[in-house]
Image 1 (cartoon, rainbow, N blue to C red):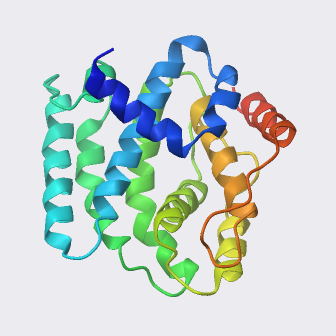
Image 2 (tube, helix red, strand yellow):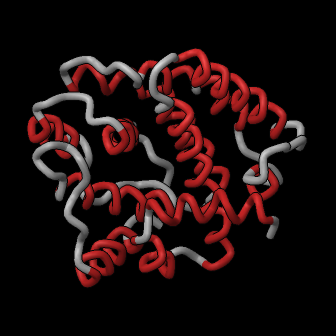
Image 3 (spheres, rainbow, N blue to C red):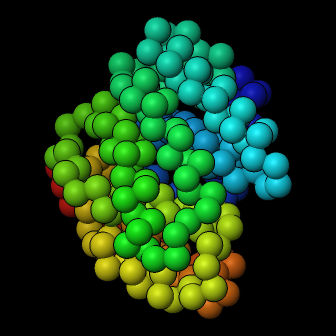
Length: 225
């Protein structure tokens, strides 16, 4: 593993220490791929979350769009691409959906109005995950994925003061058990735990106890196929 790749993976692991405990539920051949994939999604969100002048963020997202399109031609420059690009996946579809990240910088007041804005990005992510982790029942309901994306945005910059209203609205369209490949089901479960334990000010959440984490992960891993 190159030093650059290790750095990106470690950055993601530092944000998701829970993964170390639940990754045993992911088939061993998929673990490295899953970490690289979730680290990529974090990099995309980080590009969207650049504070201040949006031009650097837009330029970075444009760079990522070109990078993902090159993955379809098996020409990766980014270290994460060395892990992900060999998999034949709809990388261009994900590249085309990246403008949805710009829409997430300023969200509507209503969760019902915000969810449709991220549906195209959620659909693209679901399609890539179906290629990365084949064999699971395909995800047909995009509302849970959209809710996960909105909460991932929320973890960086809480969008509104009414924290619990947003939390309850996201949980209402995000069932405890979802379809899709096992790495997504596990990550959704971890996200949902953080959302359920969100602090009143929207800044962070109370960590789940190890037993709760393992039980939740086992239930998530046992769903689907």
